[in-house]
View: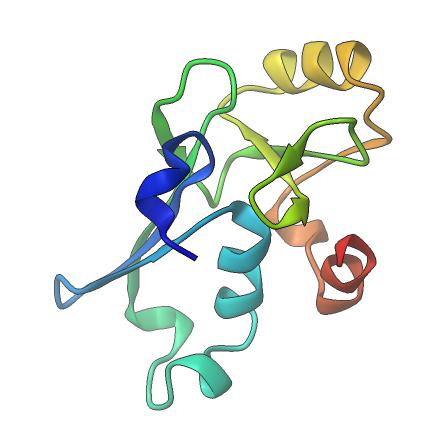
Length: 119
């Protein structure tokens, strides 16, 4: 998947050494983040300097570790069902109501099981 084709869904993990990895959506970014030993052997979450996701409404980079994510909406990302990110809870609530979302979640709620439900 070419991430540049989908800037409205782009996500990024930036490591402390300045290197970064780009993703076509928050869902795939979290798969990587939750399983660094598989996708980035030798790296640990402590090596991560920043996580960015794209706020769906204003298309700006927001902190992916503190963002709000809407599940179960009628909006699909480049790879199908997606966690739709927002920088604020109020925007996430508005989107959930407008797009039939089922839940608003935070980073602490994201698990491999939850991500598998989106595939």
